[in-house]
Image 1 (tube, rainbow, N blue to C red):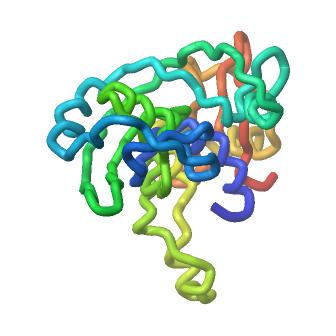
Image 2: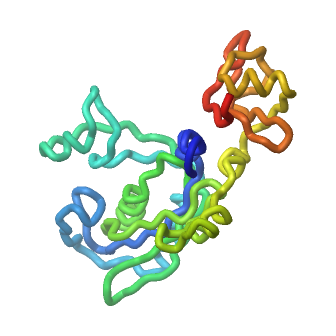
Length: 239
Protein backbone atom coordinates (compact mmCIF):
# COMPACT_ATOMS: atom_id res chain seq x y z
CA UNK A 1 0.00 0.00 0.00
CA UNK A 2 1.26 3.46 -0.89
CA UNK A 3 0.03 7.03 -0.58
CA UNK A 4 -3.33 7.50 1.11
CA UNK A 5 -3.90 3.74 1.05
CA UNK A 6 -1.38 3.33 3.89
CA UNK A 7 -4.18 4.62 6.13
CA UNK A 8 -5.85 1.25 5.63
CA UNK A 9 -3.14 -0.62 7.55
CA UNK A 10 -5.38 -0.64 10.63
CA UNK A 11 -7.79 -2.93 8.77
CA UNK A 12 -5.02 -5.36 7.80
CA UNK A 13 -3.73 -5.98 11.34
CA UNK A 14 -6.87 -7.81 12.59
CA UNK A 15 -7.00 -10.15 9.59
CA UNK A 16 -6.27 -13.87 9.81
CA UNK A 17 -2.70 -14.84 9.04
CA UNK A 18 -0.72 -17.86 7.85
CA UNK A 19 2.83 -18.81 8.78
CA UNK A 20 5.54 -21.33 8.10
CA UNK A 21 7.30 -22.05 11.39
CA UNK A 22 10.36 -24.15 12.20
CA UNK A 23 11.01 -25.40 15.72
CA UNK A 24 13.89 -27.12 17.46
CA UNK A 25 12.60 -30.15 19.32
CA UNK A 26 13.77 -31.50 22.66
CA UNK A 27 14.86 -28.10 23.96
CA UNK A 28 13.19 -25.17 25.71
CA UNK A 29 14.01 -21.47 25.73
CA UNK A 30 12.88 -18.84 28.21
CA UNK A 31 11.87 -16.61 25.29
CA UNK A 32 10.21 -19.52 23.42
CA UNK A 33 12.42 -18.66 20.44
CA UNK A 34 16.09 -18.62 19.44
CA UNK A 35 16.75 -15.36 21.30
CA UNK A 36 16.84 -17.28 24.58
CA UNK A 37 19.31 -19.83 25.89
CA UNK A 38 18.39 -23.37 24.74
CA UNK A 39 18.12 -25.93 27.52
CA UNK A 40 17.73 -29.64 26.72
CA UNK A 41 14.67 -31.51 27.98
CA UNK A 42 14.95 -35.05 29.30
CA UNK A 43 13.14 -37.80 27.47
CA UNK A 44 12.65 -38.84 23.85
CA UNK A 45 11.96 -36.32 21.11
CA UNK A 46 8.50 -36.91 19.62
CA UNK A 47 8.50 -38.29 16.08
CA UNK A 48 6.41 -37.08 13.16
CA UNK A 49 3.52 -39.49 13.73
CA UNK A 50 3.29 -38.55 17.41
CA UNK A 51 3.28 -34.85 16.58
CA UNK A 52 0.63 -35.19 13.86
CA UNK A 53 -1.65 -37.15 16.18
CA UNK A 54 -1.60 -34.28 18.68
CA UNK A 55 -2.23 -31.39 16.27
CA UNK A 56 -6.05 -31.64 16.35
CA UNK A 57 -5.93 -30.79 20.07
CA UNK A 58 -4.47 -27.41 19.13
CA UNK A 59 -6.83 -26.69 16.24
CA UNK A 60 -10.02 -24.66 16.52
CA UNK A 61 -10.97 -22.22 19.28
CA UNK A 62 -8.34 -22.49 22.03
CA UNK A 63 -7.01 -20.51 24.98
CA UNK A 64 -3.40 -19.36 24.88
CA UNK A 65 -1.23 -17.75 27.56
CA UNK A 66 0.81 -14.89 26.04
CA UNK A 67 4.60 -15.25 26.39
CA UNK A 68 6.53 -13.04 28.79
CA UNK A 69 8.36 -11.62 25.78
CA UNK A 70 5.18 -10.18 24.25
CA UNK A 71 4.30 -6.48 24.04
CA UNK A 72 1.13 -6.88 26.09
CA UNK A 73 0.82 -4.82 29.24
CA UNK A 74 0.17 -5.99 32.80
CA UNK A 75 -0.51 -3.23 35.31
CA UNK A 76 0.72 -0.70 32.76
CA UNK A 77 4.05 -2.41 32.07
CA UNK A 78 5.12 -4.27 28.94
CA UNK A 79 5.68 -7.96 29.52
CA UNK A 80 8.98 -7.90 27.63
CA UNK A 81 10.27 -5.16 29.95
CA UNK A 82 9.41 -7.29 32.97
CA UNK A 83 11.07 -10.31 31.35
CA UNK A 84 14.30 -8.37 30.83
CA UNK A 85 14.28 -7.61 34.56
CA UNK A 86 13.87 -11.28 35.38
CA UNK A 87 10.30 -10.79 36.58
CA UNK A 88 7.55 -13.24 35.61
CA UNK A 89 3.91 -12.37 36.24
CA UNK A 90 0.61 -14.17 35.91
CA UNK A 91 -0.94 -13.78 32.44
CA UNK A 92 -4.56 -14.43 31.66
CA UNK A 93 -5.25 -16.94 28.85
CA UNK A 94 -6.58 -15.32 25.68
CA UNK A 95 -8.89 -16.92 23.11
CA UNK A 96 -7.46 -17.49 19.63
CA UNK A 97 -8.58 -19.47 16.60
CA UNK A 98 -6.26 -21.95 14.92
CA UNK A 99 -7.84 -22.65 11.54
CA UNK A 100 -5.17 -25.10 10.38
CA UNK A 101 -2.09 -26.60 12.04
CA UNK A 102 -0.12 -28.99 9.85
CA UNK A 103 3.27 -30.65 10.12
CA UNK A 104 5.13 -30.15 6.85
CA UNK A 105 8.34 -32.02 7.64
CA UNK A 106 10.76 -33.18 10.31
CA UNK A 107 14.54 -33.45 10.27
CA UNK A 108 15.55 -36.04 12.88
CA UNK A 109 19.26 -35.31 12.46
CA UNK A 110 18.82 -31.58 13.08
CA UNK A 111 16.06 -32.21 15.61
CA UNK A 112 13.68 -29.79 13.90
CA UNK A 113 10.11 -29.75 12.65
CA UNK A 114 8.45 -27.36 10.22
CA UNK A 115 4.77 -26.45 10.48
CA UNK A 116 2.19 -24.55 8.46
CA UNK A 117 -0.26 -22.57 10.59
CA UNK A 118 -3.34 -20.53 9.74
CA UNK A 119 -4.67 -18.55 12.68
CA UNK A 120 -6.51 -15.51 13.94
CA UNK A 121 -4.76 -12.23 14.62
CA UNK A 122 -3.17 -12.13 18.06
CA UNK A 123 -1.98 -15.74 18.00
CA UNK A 124 1.52 -16.30 19.38
CA UNK A 125 3.05 -19.00 17.21
CA UNK A 126 5.98 -19.50 19.59
CA UNK A 127 3.52 -20.25 22.40
CA UNK A 128 1.58 -22.62 20.16
CA UNK A 129 4.75 -24.57 19.35
CA UNK A 130 5.85 -24.65 22.99
CA UNK A 131 2.43 -25.77 24.23
CA UNK A 132 2.29 -28.53 21.62
CA UNK A 133 5.68 -29.90 22.66
CA UNK A 134 4.84 -29.64 26.36
CA UNK A 135 1.66 -31.66 25.81
CA UNK A 136 3.87 -34.40 24.35
CA UNK A 137 6.10 -34.45 27.41
CA UNK A 138 8.92 -32.68 25.61
CA UNK A 139 9.96 -29.15 24.69
CA UNK A 140 10.43 -27.00 21.60
CA UNK A 141 11.26 -23.44 20.70
CA UNK A 142 10.81 -21.42 17.54
CA UNK A 143 13.86 -21.02 15.31
CA UNK A 144 12.30 -19.49 12.18
CA UNK A 145 9.00 -17.84 11.34
CA UNK A 146 7.77 -16.67 7.95
CA UNK A 147 4.42 -14.97 7.44
CA UNK A 148 2.93 -16.20 4.17
CA UNK A 149 -0.54 -14.64 4.20
CA UNK A 150 -2.48 -11.75 5.70
CA UNK A 151 -6.17 -11.91 4.85
CA UNK A 152 -6.26 -12.48 1.09
CA UNK A 153 -2.79 -10.97 0.57
CA UNK A 154 -0.20 -13.64 -0.23
CA UNK A 155 3.55 -13.45 0.21
CA UNK A 156 3.93 -15.13 -3.18
CA UNK A 157 2.33 -12.09 -4.82
CA UNK A 158 4.77 -9.65 -3.21
CA UNK A 159 7.78 -8.06 -4.92
CA UNK A 160 10.99 -6.71 -3.47
CA UNK A 161 12.01 -3.10 -4.29
CA UNK A 162 14.85 -4.43 -6.43
CA UNK A 163 12.36 -6.22 -8.69
CA UNK A 164 10.32 -3.12 -9.45
CA UNK A 165 10.61 -0.33 -11.98
CA UNK A 166 8.03 2.37 -12.75
CA UNK A 167 6.15 0.19 -15.21
CA UNK A 168 6.02 -2.96 -13.11
CA UNK A 169 5.19 -0.95 -9.98
CA UNK A 170 1.94 0.27 -11.53
CA UNK A 171 1.05 -3.30 -12.45
CA UNK A 172 1.89 -4.72 -9.01
CA UNK A 173 0.13 -2.21 -6.77
CA UNK A 174 -2.80 -3.83 -5.01
CA UNK A 175 -6.00 -1.82 -5.10
CA UNK A 176 -7.30 -0.74 -1.67
CA UNK A 177 -10.47 -2.73 -2.32
CA UNK A 178 -8.42 -5.91 -1.97
CA UNK A 179 -7.69 -5.01 1.64
CA UNK A 180 -11.28 -4.03 2.44
CA UNK A 181 -13.08 -6.74 0.50
CA UNK A 182 -14.61 -8.11 3.69
CA UNK A 183 -16.35 -4.84 4.54
CA UNK A 184 -19.86 -4.10 3.23
CA UNK A 185 -20.22 -1.20 0.80
CA UNK A 186 -22.67 1.69 0.51
CA UNK A 187 -22.88 3.93 -2.54
CA UNK A 188 -23.23 7.71 -2.63
CA UNK A 189 -24.00 10.15 -5.42
CA UNK A 190 -22.24 13.35 -6.48
CA UNK A 191 -23.27 15.39 -3.43
CA UNK A 192 -22.45 12.51 -1.12
CA UNK A 193 -19.03 12.18 -2.70
CA UNK A 194 -18.22 15.80 -1.93
CA UNK A 195 -19.29 15.35 1.68
CA UNK A 196 -17.34 12.12 2.12
CA UNK A 197 -14.15 13.45 0.52
CA UNK A 198 -14.29 16.36 2.96
CA UNK A 199 -14.66 13.92 5.85
CA UNK A 200 -18.03 15.27 6.88
CA UNK A 201 -20.44 13.51 9.21
CA UNK A 202 -23.45 12.04 7.43
CA UNK A 203 -26.74 10.44 8.25
CA UNK A 204 -26.22 6.81 9.31
CA UNK A 205 -26.44 4.16 6.61
CA UNK A 206 -27.74 1.47 8.97
CA UNK A 207 -24.71 -0.81 8.64
CA UNK A 208 -23.11 -2.58 11.60
CA UNK A 209 -19.39 -1.94 12.05
CA UNK A 210 -17.06 -0.33 9.53
CA UNK A 211 -18.13 -0.12 5.88
CA UNK A 212 -16.79 1.10 2.56
CA UNK A 213 -18.26 4.21 0.96
CA UNK A 214 -18.03 4.08 -2.84
CA UNK A 215 -19.07 6.15 -5.84
CA UNK A 216 -19.39 3.75 -8.71
CA UNK A 217 -16.13 1.78 -8.72
CA UNK A 218 -14.22 4.44 -6.77
CA UNK A 219 -13.46 3.70 -3.13
CA UNK A 220 -13.90 6.95 -1.23
CA UNK A 221 -13.62 6.18 2.46
CA UNK A 222 -14.39 3.91 5.37
CA UNK A 223 -17.20 5.06 7.64
CA UNK A 224 -18.92 3.80 10.77
CA UNK A 225 -22.37 4.60 12.16
CA UNK A 226 -22.25 6.13 15.62
CA UNK A 227 -25.71 6.82 16.97
CA UNK A 228 -27.51 9.42 14.86
CA UNK A 229 -24.61 10.05 12.47
CA UNK A 230 -21.99 8.35 10.35
CA UNK A 231 -18.36 9.31 10.96
CA UNK A 232 -15.33 8.87 8.73
CA UNK A 233 -12.65 6.46 9.94
CA UNK A 234 -10.42 6.80 6.88
CA UNK A 235 -10.83 9.13 3.89
CA UNK A 236 -9.02 8.11 0.71
CA UNK A 237 -10.34 10.63 -1.82
CA UNK A 238 -9.24 14.24 -2.16
CA UNK A 239 -11.82 17.05 -1.65
